[in-house]
Length: 374
Image 1: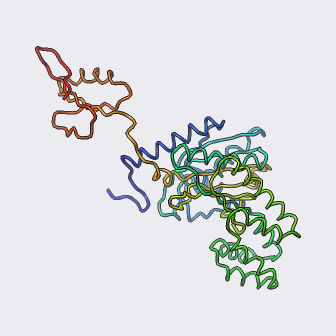
Image 2 (image 1 turned 30 degrees about the vertical axis):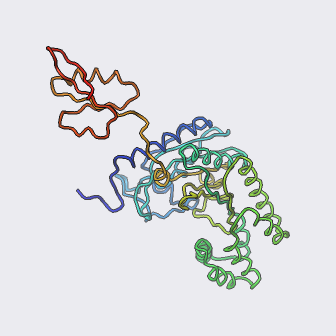
Image 3 (image 1 turned 60 degrees about the horizontal axis):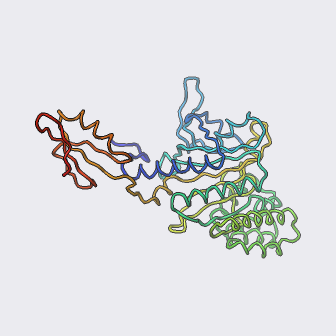
């Protein structure tokens, strides 16, 4: 049978690598004090399409239930977990999750994610824990240090706030900044301000590079106290990461948020080998406002497919083959238990034994079964 567009079968080493990544992630997060959490794969669409989240219904896998309400396959872990935790006791909490999200607007339909959500923690402590945990995990699976990019919603939004844009124009400008279209950013800003402000905003497209770039912008924005505080926050976090042995750190002062609920620091991790994004996340305090709560919250999600592709499968166990027939199957099962911490495969005489470390055959001699090594 054919599969719907975006769906795929998995087998063999790719599946083993994915399971290995997820199991090692569970071990790393458990040892760092996280507790597991899981949410239903089916949710109400309104959980994700309300004004606080503003995800697009057309991008979701959806249907009408018997009561006429729209249900969807989970498109986002962070929102689902926030719903689950909104009534929890207000104390520092660290949660870890593993599972799929489903989106139509991506090359595939089902995406495997692992990640953590941290709530009721001081800002810098929660943010650094997300990134330090991610780095520790990448080292555990053999990927090593990655390039970390830091950004902050406050920088772009504080400059745009002065323009008094309509909702349509604000989205158009945000998309232009996201796509790094400097000329378009300048023209949109110029139609709502003077040349000086338009140039300042357009210059954010180029405000990308090593952590030292912050010094340049601290001088440039010395009259903007709110932005200066944001730059200091980024520098403090970068210092913690560098002192903890993290790899290269970059900043993108023109980074814009993809979802409305991001409300502070944002970060991404890039593999040094390929440049692929292996994790992303940030602060999302505003997400809990839909539940009538004001909560400090930050999280990071890691792309399992990207990471699994970096794993080199190794044979950790010796492979043993036992040749048996219908008469000796029960005896072969007992023989299997004599090989500890080995992969033991019981096969028929017709099997190709290539690929096994040792091969044994069960023969019946003088009315008794005996195991003979080939």
